[in-house]
Every structure is written in C-alpha cells, then in structure tokens.
Length: 520
Image (cartoon, rainbow, N blue to C red):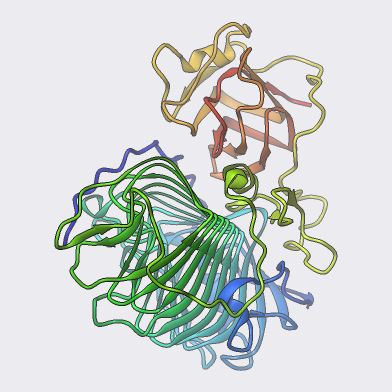
C-alpha cells in the first residue's frame, strides 16, 4: 500500500561544492583495514573483514574511489579506500578495468569483494550520490555521511537509496554512518538502507538514519524472501515515516536502537519474516512494531523494550500493530554473542556513539561509550597539516575577542519565543532553541573570518541538555569537530564565512545562550 509522506523536516545543511576534478587516489603503505570489531550477523558465514591486509589508498573524489577499485590486480584483491571530502556527481565518473564494473553518478561496488571504504580526517560526505552494492561480498563501509540521494528530480542516483544492496550480496558491515534525506517519495527520495534479491549477513551498527519517508527495506516484494540474517544495533532512527525497517521473509535482529519520531509505522515484519527485538527505546512514535499494509503476517520476539509516548492504531485486515502491549509470537535463535545495554540508557549511549564523525565510539555493554581499543583502531588520521575532529576542551572560555559579536546568525528552526540572534547578543539571559530536540544554528560574516575555537554556552536551567553535535564549515560542508556536550570546542584554524553548530542529539530541550567564536 502506498503511503503519503508526512515527514517533519529540519532543514538540512547546505552543501558546499568541491571542484569537479577527478582527484587521483594516492597510494600509501600496505595496512590493515582501519575498523573496529564487526558485530552481529556480519560475523557469520565466514565473517566480514573488508579490505584488511590490502593496500591503503586515499581518495577525495568519486572518480578516485573508482580508480582505486579498478587499479587492483583482481576484483577480489583486498583494498582499504580512505575517503575525505565531498563526493558528488561532478567528481564521480565511470572508470573501466578488469577488476571493477563502475558507473558515473553512483559509487558502484559491483561484482567485487574485499573492500573497505572509510571516512577519515574532516569527514567523507556522499552528497546526492548513493552507494550501490551488487553481486559483491565482504564489504565494509564506515564513518561516512550519505545524504539527499534522489530517484526522481535532479540529480538522480542509485534509485534513490543512500546505501542499496541487491543481487547475491553477502557479508556487509555498515558502521558509524549517517544516512539522511530531506523528505519522502513525493520529494524524490526512496530508502536509506535497502536490501533485496538475495542479500544476507549484514550488520548496520552505530549509525543515524533520519529525515526520510522510508528508513529501509529487506525484500523488494512479498515474493522476495531470500534476504535474511540482518542485525541492527545502536542506531538512531529519527523522523522516519515508515520502514524502520520493512522486513519481508528472513530473520532480523534489532537491539539497543533508539527510534524517535516514527510517524506512521516502524519495524514492519511481514510475509513470514521473524524479528527479534531486544532492549530498544521507542519514543514519540506510532505503531512501532507489527505487520502493516499487508495481510501476509510476519512475526516477532520482544523483550526489554521501552515504549515512551508510543501510540497504537486499531487492528484491521491489513494492519496488525503489536501494541499496545507487545508480546512475542515467535522465537528467534541468535548464533552470535552480543551484550545488551539496558533499554533505559539507550538514548544516551546512542546519542554519543551513533553516526559519522563520532570517533568510532561504541558502548562497553554497561551504557558507557568508549573509544576503540588497541585491537580495534579507528580510521587512520591524516598528517599534522590536516587534523581531524577534536573533542571539547576545558569549559573555561577562550581568551581574545568574541568574533560573534557584530556578526549575523541563522539556523534550521527555532522554538516559539526564541531567536537566532540571541546567540550572538553577548547576553546569557536570552537563548535560541530548535523547534524540536535537534537542529542547527549558525554564525556568519560578510567576509572570510579565521576561527579555531567556539564556545557554546547553555542557558540557565538547561545545562547538560545538549548531547551529540557537529561543527561544520558551512562554506564547504566539512565537519570541523564532533562530540558531545556544550563548552569549548577546538579545531584546526579555518577561514570561513559561516560556521554551524548542529545538535544531533539531546536530553530535554537544548537552549544555546551564546555561540561564541574565537580566532585562537
């Protein structure tokens, strides 16, 4: 059944265009894949190692990614591709070779194996450009943002999917990714994370999926039941209309995810599918679990979940919500080891760990985020001339002139009675709040201004409400810093006209009294 899109959008950040040069991939020394420990079903069927043990190359364009794939000795030669910068239609061309099968306007991982794509440095953004995995195996995608991929309008890419898998795909791990759109099908978008036509042994972990009509599907039709063994854990689904995910046939395991603002339906288990749903936190949502828009039933095993302000619709012939008191109607055996966080702390731990540019932080199983250990290194950092994001420093304000005084301000949304200008007026008695729990506010100048530190001051009574954040150079779209909590945030000295503080997670209502900027 076709559903209307009722997505409540926060305006997404504008995209800075990079040069459309092809950008050669620069070879570095042989290295292991820079990833943490794979989890979930991607550990089965021989495991998922990506390009571990292969050559490491750096790419700043989509063409360079394709060149790296095509430059291998064979289609199965391991390779780690470190990506930094904005990948878009202008810099993604088809490249030919015996070890690849690529296409322009999409990152094509087709008929290949043993590949890792990992964002490094100031971040990797695939802008209006999807990642297509087809007839491939042993693939890792980590620490990347994929946004605004369209199936209609202009430009189009990957059938409108941010990450799409189809046709005999095996063993894929997507980790610490941010997948986002700006609406639903009527606005030209499709799914954020789709699997179809015999895709198996996939894990999506520590990722953010938001602002889309469709979160993703497993199986393209009621007859496409060959897709199975999928794990979703420690992900944030926010402002999604439906398909979080839609599961047709097969088995899926969802644990320790935070589902927030699922507007029409959430986990849609149908056509004989079985979902194991453990210790998730469902918040401000509707019909978060059940069989929807079909008479072909699916099944679920539930335990330890929190339902916070969840509403349930009445049952009908093609609409079978699991609530208002969800109980199990099947049993699912999980073949791998995993540790559950308590559902009550899932919003907190997910806000600190899920998404790109979070330092690859993971939960230690006791609701406490931790950085990857020595055996699970994060992405290789660039040299000292290109430092990556940094965590907030001391809470004492920097010295020098607050460059925000006399500047301009705007943002994505504002709550009633608040103003963007309140963050640059030098007074902590006024403040800006987003219209929801997340949003962004920017400081801007008429000419390029050098900034290396910001100080985010929360209004009285709301200290600690700001959770995860990103600091973005609005001129280019580069992520300057990411982390959690307000205070002083330092990054490499940058000349820009507009800088954005984006709140991607919060507890309570965030209130920014002052957004101070400093040259040093």
